[in-house]
Picture 1 (cartoon, rainbow, N blue to C red):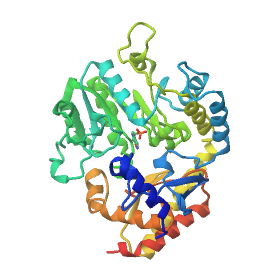
Picture 2 (picture 1 turned 135 degrees about the horizontal axis):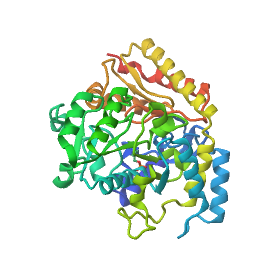
Picture 3 (picture 1 turned 90 degrees about the horizontal axis):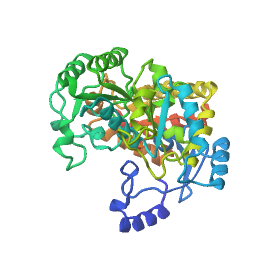
Picture 4 (picture 1 turned 45 degrees about the vertical axis):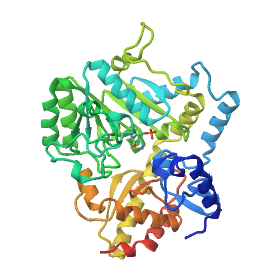
Length: 435
Ligand code: PMP
């Protein structure tokens, strides 16, 4: 384990002024956090000078790694011109033009500062548009921390209820019962059961919120039948389909909707579309997006935000998406495939019963060969997530950063040799995970 006296000192200071010394639950680590100093390409140097290969990219947002020239130049130019104004800038129009051109279902967009806010506004838009209160979401799927979006990710199976009727379980203590009552939880990829549950909500349902490859529910792709059912049933019930592409936009030139051939009413975006700066976006058909339109009096959904559409995020985002050429996607696919093959061989060599889920540049490692289809099977497979998180910790000490749940995100800053280095990291730590 590399020594980390500087991080230890920083953490001692942090403990005095931040709860648990932390401001972001997802980056907490015991016994103390490791503080980043610098990123270059696909590597991070921490405050003690230890260099690690970064296969997470700030939780999938840095698709071009650190220090991409085109993004740096665009952001710097904007920093000099002004970081934010109480006025719109041309950059928000340009980013919207690019996104509308790429995403077949999106005619118009608005911006937020995070994916959480994007999902929040998508839900509000659906409620305003339909005049209905309820939102359906898949059990275990993460969509940020807006109350209705964060339900049913509780890690204690005792609270989950029967698979035919998964409970609307609070994630944050103190969530009002009224919020939970308006969330309909459906089992991911279980077409028949999900359809029955949706139909039972009938004309109270404003929208179904779906991620086609939910990371926390296993990073297993949705089946075509499941997606076709959601589109058909939402139309029949007069509800909207919200596609959360905060992570999955990076699956292809036309986003997840292009790759999965799905036609949502509203799309939420974030992460990569800000080029490494804070961002979120809501997009959809002009008719649906008109709930935000302030030009004809008070809009159905007022939406502001002091830093929404700030021109630094817009400019960096434009540059990042311009760099996502068809060739860039080919490279990302190849890196993902190389990892897939490498890790399978590595599992065999170490006698590990493991598997990889995911597509393209997003992969998740599981320490089981049992079939994974949803949150429940994924949770059971990881022994309550503890074995995979121990693996991620061991990798970190060997110089490889992946998420605590086994998620990896490859970037255009990586080459084949970097993927091989990641695999060698796995090779050094896997043996204790044999059983
Ligand atoms: N939706 C999905 C699918 C996500 O993965 C995330 C973040 N990981 C969010 C929404 C929330 O985005 P943010 O962290 O920018 O609020």
